[in-house]
Image: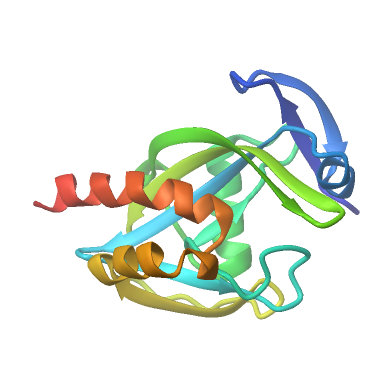
Length: 175
């Protein structure tokens, strides 16, 4: 059964719901989240699986997805961390850093999301689901920042917007 996504206005007020496919075909603004897990000066990133319907093969943050209708945002984050990477994470340890709206076309589909950015410290194991993730690895933050500056086309659209905010936060926390 297809997930039902939460349609929102620009202030994140729910205004309806739609199936995942419909939301992306009609470019309907919906709630989403991006999770950035780090340890010290490294971030756990993923390369999206080749079979993903958009942004396949691009590098992105640890996990990203959508809450389902009736699901709390933090619960959705923990559900998807487990589904995508076999990471168990306590939602009380998550920091809701910021949110932003972005829109990106992918041929006949589009992402139009109000993306909530979550950050958390993590030093455990992971086992990516190959349907979702081709590869995961820890990368030094400074290396990642330089790669993003020089080769932005290698990264997902939401990552290029969110990473600088997360990078600044981690540098302030870890110093």
